[in-house]
Length: 466
Image 1 (cartoon, rainbow, N blue to C red):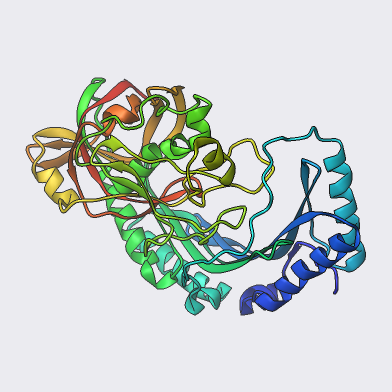
Image 2: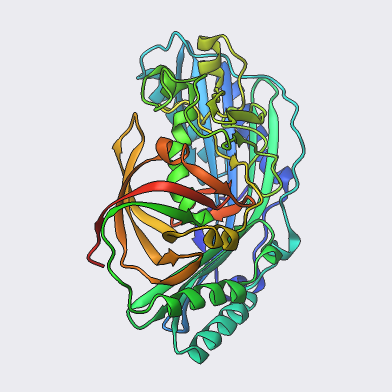
């Protein structure tokens, strides 16, 4: 096998589109590592092979200024012997390099203290099939992305606005095997379009992400951002205080996403979670139900976790009651529970976390929320968010890219951005209306399926200076 290093592709390859290796080739790499480890006398070995093909078109000032693409493959090897485990990674797949990686892993493990709670690697598992590889996304070329961006930039020029953003597409596949017979594989495609439209001093934003590029229209996203940028002119300054807010899905994600690690059984046991001592209690409104569901049609993600355990759907909050937690094999054994398939690759200090959060929605549209609001604020999204009080889940941050005053059921105009200090727990107790849930994505790569929300008594602490 030839060595494969992470590399930038040629412009010709970027235009024509790269392809993933056949799954059988990745399985062969895994089998080679297991064979070499067995020859070396290693009792237990685990191999992750991850390959990605990523391409990006970046634009600003109504002009494309960057096309990049890269393809990479990483082999991650974990050995376990005599209560000690370690992991190394390499991007070389010839036998000599893989043998050297195994030796490095054994050397690293020998310097680790014994872990009396280290479990044997799991054996063969059964997985639900998920189909998240879309040929239309996989074959998207630089020219395809450029045409979509050109339409957006031409639209911006007609509106006397300036467009900036990115259009990316990619393919990923993973193979996980171990010396006890476990074998798992998964692949998916993804596409993301993000656009900021600026008019004078005002700007707004829209973003979408999906495994299927046909599920969003870049021009329609640009039109949404354009309309908000035009509406955001001459913002008025409002007094800080508590307001009824209508959070669009991205803003809901920006805050609710910070509950991510709190549903970890390890975090609860270590008293690092806002749910420590509160599981089984009504912490949220009765209209709030949250699950982790890797099989939801709008989610992306593999049907197995970092150790190869099958992911289970877990109801985390049931009509306001903090009901469930997610478990790795280790935390499940300690708690006398069954693993839920949410563990990270070992060794790690985090344990587990839900990666496919879904907040159940309702039937009230954003327009209906606005129409039912006597006075409040419509929030596009939030940013620069930091945790103030971990146990009460008080967060601080700022609004951005479109904050609008709602009066007597209509948008009355733009408002200056606010800083907020708000407990997420309190926020989810004060939800008055929920819209249909949808796949939302924010500033970072994290995605959830969440609804827009109308919330009372949201606390804004001061007006920002920008």
